[in-house]
Image 1 (cartoon, rainbow, N blue to C red):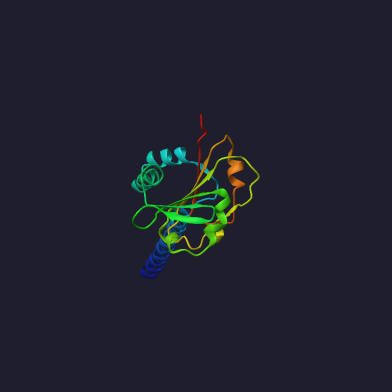
Image 2: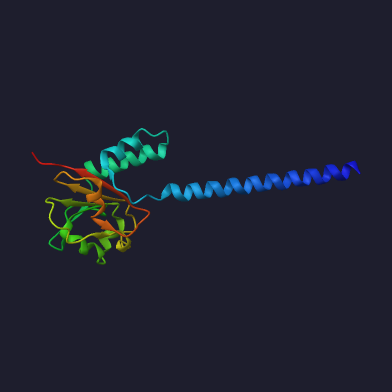
Length: 181
């Protein structure tokens, strides 16, 4: 009789261990899924880079270096001005630069877009927004990770949020305020 009790007890322990294991796996899966997705709230570029640089995770430090290189180093880039695309560098473009008025051009099919990791949108004046960027419509940008707004006047994050709509959980919204002297 005693052995049956031990057997039943050990069986429930095994089931408990399996349940704890499954809950742990589920928690890890949910955490990893959320970790790769970005929120759509805009973040000031230098703050984002510094937070990643100061992280204990090597993945964050690598991302900090990558963003810095994309923004500050010479990279193969395409430019859109007046709905015309030009590419001045050799190799696949990993960065694109456009003005806010040229945003609709980003929804057209173009092979150059497939390797682009960052789109920089320059905004020189605080005119009425004629074109919001629709994040959901950037499907041809297979490698897109960042949209970087460069703004030449003082504004707050609510203004940045008014520049885009839709969702793209693989894309982080960054902004830099560069007020000319």
